[in-house]
Image (tube, rainbow, N blue to C red):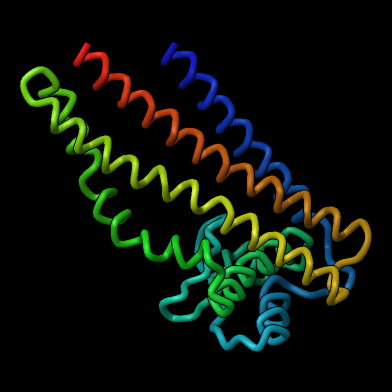
Length: 223
């Protein structure tokens, strides 16, 4: 049963990631009619929302992120200087996080509060789980502690879902209202961001499946 569960989750994650790569590649070949690059879109959205933040390029593909610590919108090289629907969608999405930060969006506030606990849990969870599995017969409490740590990271994955979905919603709403995208371009931007959202869903479900596995491992030992 567990093997089937992990196979299903693994396949789902693979196809979701593959779908995102295909969508991003496809819409990266669709130029914006107004000629705006990802950095242009980001600058415009930040300005329209009265947000002062630094926009800078970072290496990698789909490595884009908003950093509230130094108020920076970091765009991957394929987004920062690219004139494409994919670049516009990703740039607007990251600026959506900046808007969340400015308006103190509740789920983002919760996610931020969880960061210290998640950082601690992520640092130790693998070692504690490994020790718990090896010592499950003599010291099952260690596995229980590992499950608790893993539960924190799983909770973080699920809290991340509404944060990412809301950022995409803000991005699409602004792109359309500002006239940056229209008609088919807006639908293409929606499609790209929906594909990205599915990766977070797959990650959350994968984390939950793993958590359930460890819980049943502990319960099975007690039985």
